Image (cartoon, rainbow, N blue to C red; front, side):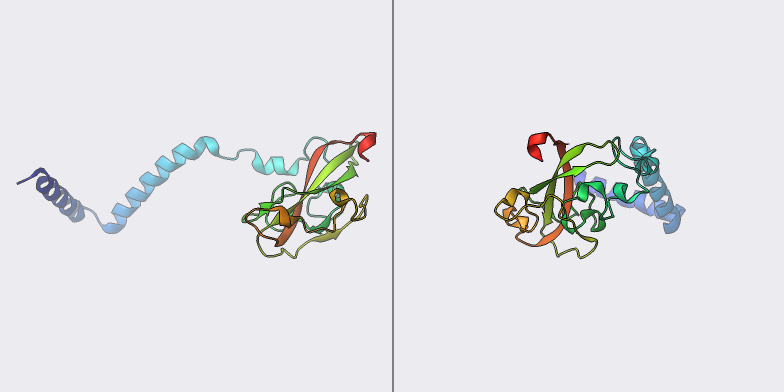
Length: 187
């Protein structure tokens, strides 16, 4: 009799003995409880302790979230002064990140928006999110500082998804990323 046969016989006997002494529900409850305890103990340091409160606080230099200028889901949000499209924050992403399953276009248009909180002008990069169906929610069309198409880097009327690798040319939504504080030459 080989080692493998002895291990099989031992495991078979131990399984039958365990089956005689416990019910299926009791066994599954204990195994599930053990799994929760070990998984919960390892995830404990990762719990988002202050996350809910932090979302209500404005970021430094951001207008209050209760105002239209501070709400990323409103067209009046200060970063959207030159936006033309669907807001990523209404489509499953945020004002700075694309929705899952889409790809951010590397080719963008830029605008200069004034932050009402600090009164400074900021250069904003508007990146299209590409690859899924069109979002169709929270359409905003603001053309402050939009230039004619002969200045394509400042035009919001171009489908910028043509520059993506895998997503194709399907436009989903748009994000707005602060590049930096504008100087006189950038306006």
